[in-house]
Amino acid sequence: MVSLFRPREYYRPKDLREATWLLSSFGRKARVIAGGTDLLVDKPPEVECLVDISNLNLGYIRKDKDGINIGAATLLGLIESSPILSSGPYIVVSEAVSMLATPTIRNMATIGGNICNASPAADMPLALMVLDATMKIAGLKGSRILPIGDFFQDVKKTILDDGELLVEIHIPVSSKNSGTAFQKLRHHQASVDLAIVNVATKLTCSDNLCEDARIALGAVAKTPIRAKKAEKLLIGKKIDTALMQRAAEAASEEAKPIDDVRASAEYRKKMVAVLARRALEASFKRCTTWQK
Amino acid sequence: MAKVKIGISVNGKCYELDVEFYETLLNVLRNKLGLTGTKFGCGKGECGACTVNINGEAILSCLTLAVQADGKEILTIEGLQNGTKLHPLQEAFVKHSAIQCGYCTPGVIMAAKALLDCDPKPSEETVRKALANNLCRCTGYDKPVKAILEAAKTMRGKHEK
Image 1 (tube, rainbow over the protein chains, first blue to last red):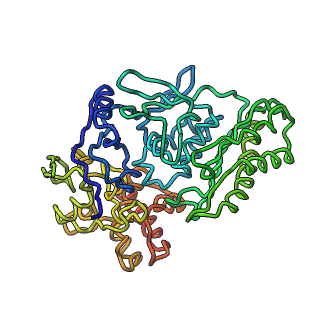
Image 2: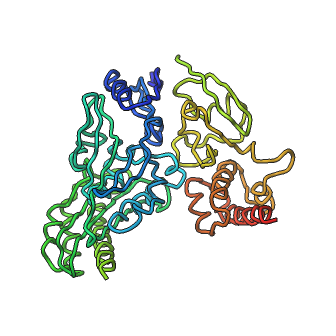
Image 3: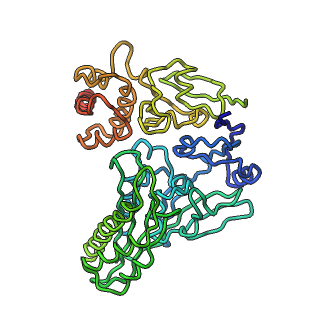
């Protein structure tokens, strides 16, 4: 017999305490629902209880002296049009959103959903990784904060324990000398298609000297990854086209993709080099333009 | 199975309904309210045939649970016309023959309606982007885009008078 998606309970908690209590009492049988654009496509039959987080007031973008805080249930559409996340080093966030699915989906989907679904091809984790974002996780016993790099454990598996909920994403203040960019390859560039390969980069330079670099790759491993060897190639060096090309090729070496319906592993590796080079060039251009 | 009572407004009319937790808004519209203008296409958010407006935004009703729509205002293709008078978008679609098989049309028009409500003077590019979640395998999009641009003009004309 085919098992169907037939949750028997549905709750819309009023506060975090109630939400985490529900999530811990139902354990693996509970699932958070926000936009529903992943959950209602997957329709997992094991889910018995839905916890709707729409009443928790987790839809916001706030800037303070320490950086930017984004509520986990903030709609992607809101992020895309946010002036804070469309300028300076933070532009990588809105750039990633603008290439994520379609405007209609972005009216429904949330940033937390894109992260917690833990798809290896997800876009938001890459943009947040290059900005050194941290995740605030609420649980029954209080909250904890983790770097986004520690959040993903495997395909569709995060570090969240039963009863835990991602509540906020914090982006620390980035150096004014930083430039970032996002690149994505998919079969149809303006459709719901997932990434064949996606890349986010950040370069921090004074004049042409690279002080810091971040390269994050998607759809080439079980989780989003950083290409740390490629980053090391750039740090401390004068940036030029040849160096960016070399770093992009190094990033391609660090990618460990698989063959699947969307593309072969071999093609993905080659495309990492192309997309990483384009992203690095755009990041470099942005950090040099802003310094003028 | 567990049922829950919800209250929704559809095309200006209020309904109190008993729904299952897993029931989609699309199912409620078509099978409980008999509003079959909104279509089921892929059920996965890829085709846009089920697009409706919720609180003025284009939303996929196949990926919205009925219980999530509780307390909200829903507009479907049936709610666009004013009495026997077609909405400018509908008129423009007829005038430009922007319809072939017609299956995607309600979704396309509802996506366009949400766009024109927030952007009365969209560029062609904006219109095309707004239709990114609406698959049409007949028209090639050319006529629907022209119809939407003309409807925008008609609607602006009305407000400017």
